[in-house]
Image 1 (tube, rainbow, N blue to C red):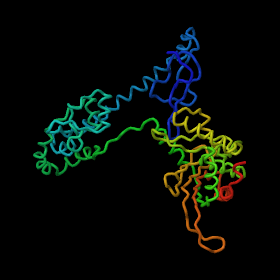
Image 2: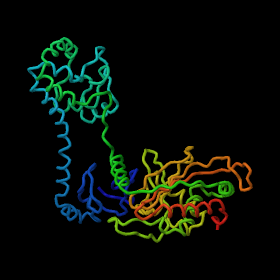
Image 3: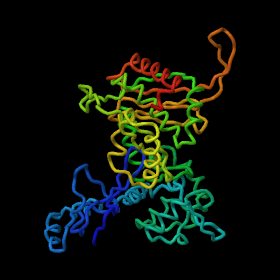
Image 4: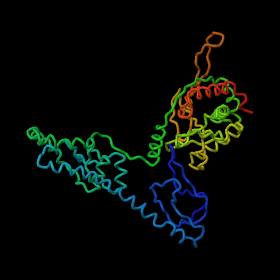
Amino acid sequence: LCLCLSVCLSVVFLLQADMDVETFYDGYIGSIVVPDGATAAVGEPIAYIAETEAELEEAKSKSGGGGAPAAAAAEPEPEAPAAPPAEAAAPAPAAPAPAPAAPAPAPVKRADGRVIATPYAKKLAKELGVDLSTLGGSGPNGRITASDVELAKSGGAPPAAPPASTPAATPAAPAAASSPPAKKAAPAAAAPSGDGEVVPFTGMQAAVSSNMIASLEIPVSRVAYTITTDAFDALYKKLKPKGVTMTALLSKAVAVALTKHPIMYAACTPAGDGIIYNENINIAVAVAMPDGGLITPVLQNADKTDIYQLSRNWGDLVTRARGKQLAPDEYSTGTFTISNLGMYGVDKFDAILPSGTGTIMAVGGSKPTVVATADGKIGVEKQMTINLTTDHRIIYGADAAEFCQTLKAVIENPDDLTM
């Protein structure tokens, strides 16, 4: 297979999104070390590319059989269905006692012959090559669930209608339930019950779960602050026809404030024994992906870039982010993160701190608020609430509060943002 420029070589699952990783070299795939669907450590080779056909054999030899172990590692997955037979084996010792058979929910075919299955069961049946018309369902009204499909694929006996006769056996159960059968009934109760089904995580969801747990291990501090936005909104209204976006304007304001508070865009060392003072103010802004998840495109050197160029950069980043075409340094180099839900009507919220950074700022919507003016009268101002979540190992409450004061001054007197 010949690779052309900018061909997607793999997909990397990020904090809350997946991103295509392209190869920017021409050549031929000599060998694939990590098969499709498998995982690889950062920096580990996933394939070898030969620049010419003459180098194909050398590229193949470099794999060193790396693909074989990966393929072998994928083998245990089909063995997972072996778990259902284990459950079937548990009731086997209880065969002499008819009581245990009654509590276990048995799949039953519908009397009208219709095949009703959950969406995931249909998808799983198609993947495993199982004919749903031959199965009974353990769900409500004979609905076929994913576990029914897995049981059929693993060689479990197809469910039949006999469960309807089980009520006749139930009267005998109380008589035998004096002592031994009670112990036998316990394993049956351990079987999953209810109408729901378990759907495995996608690769992206698994990455999100792992990264969120890692983030929650960081001791954090939270500070909320209210800022008046009348002047800021007026400036945006004036600049919008010139192509300036609210995201770029807000990022610029944050970047200007950060220049006076280096600790706010610093980070704790991986070992937790020092502070990394970043040289650049790179504002990462959370963007929802069309297929779910989030990505955080980065406005690099936001403090040194004028508002018009910053807006153009942001438009380009968002377009390529949703097309999964961002380069790694365009989504992984943020030193301060903004998450804005104000456009959804959210007043205020707390955001989870991304690992490897010191601060994330959650921005709520700006709305008219009745306030007491400086001269003691009642007035109306547009206000928004920001919530800072910081790594409390390096950023203390006073640091966050002082930054909020500076940001408030910048937003309430925003004329300098256009310079």
